[in-house]
Length: 431
Image (cartoon, rainbow, N blue to C red; front, side, top):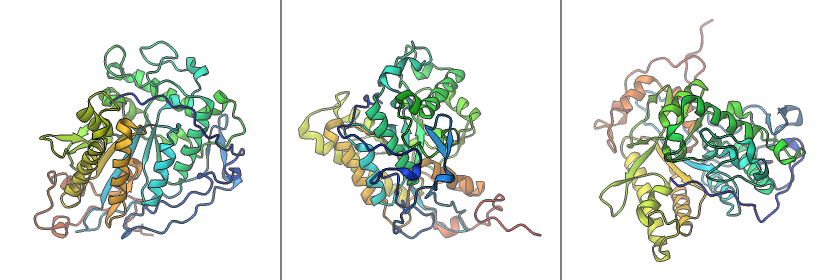
């Protein structure tokens, strides 16, 4: 996985919001977010409903006002425990490494695509994208000198644009995770060599940069992010998928709920190191004899090598190849074991932007289908937590693409264990 390129300054100056969410400038997508329409158990697309910003009295600033507490996140579906014999929904997770808004405007674009197709997503924010270049010395990466980063830093306009997208994305029900900071891969101090304590320090710094962007930029009158990042941050994907073992130990101790840094087959997820293992998966690679990881970078490397801008005559074919591979993986799960499909991407224009086009076409083709739920990792983890462990164990017995031979009604017909107290579907307490 190549390091995500440095966030550039946007060409358009974003409107600066007032000091509370209720005072966001007209036209800010975060000020009047639409319902994602992702509702557990719904038969299909739901009509979007406008969401009013929280009242001024509901905004409780945290620290320097870079973040705030505004109540429960809007537009999160309430997870429902499967009923006996009920076929599981087909979950699809679209996620973005190193999420930030730059001159390409891909963050804002895919927010629009998601809303138009009843999807929510996970955005893994790189902490250094919230830190101005002139303040780079504040970052002290493990095993590297202060101010070092393999993906650079940001500028004030880039931070303002990224904050605007993060604010709107969260209000629409999307998740804000972390891709950490400096994106160090390989030997010589790469994340694969970090200790548990060094991972904890890296995570603490990623949180710090999100919680202090106002102080570091001087934009003290801008609207805060509408969430408490200490509570919002529950999962991550490591740079280059390296250093997972020690990261997971650190993440468990810090209260994270999932990790998506591994490589799996299309099987139902289980727990690993106390976290949900929501790793990306291998799907068919059309025209090739092997399967491919569900990530744009991996398709690119197996098409144009390390050249991010290969033969222009092949761009369309390469995008179609990725799109069709993801769709084949989706259909294999949808008609088979219904294992969640986990997809990872970058806001990049590799090979002429063909992978962005491919991902958008997959979203449009799958997310509005009956029984499909395009959700964030948080929403998937919520749903898994709500299920009977015996049901999940039974689902994990199904192989890749394997549907129950006797049908879903018979396969999951057993009487499930009582739902934990407080979980939807739990029996009412007796007086």
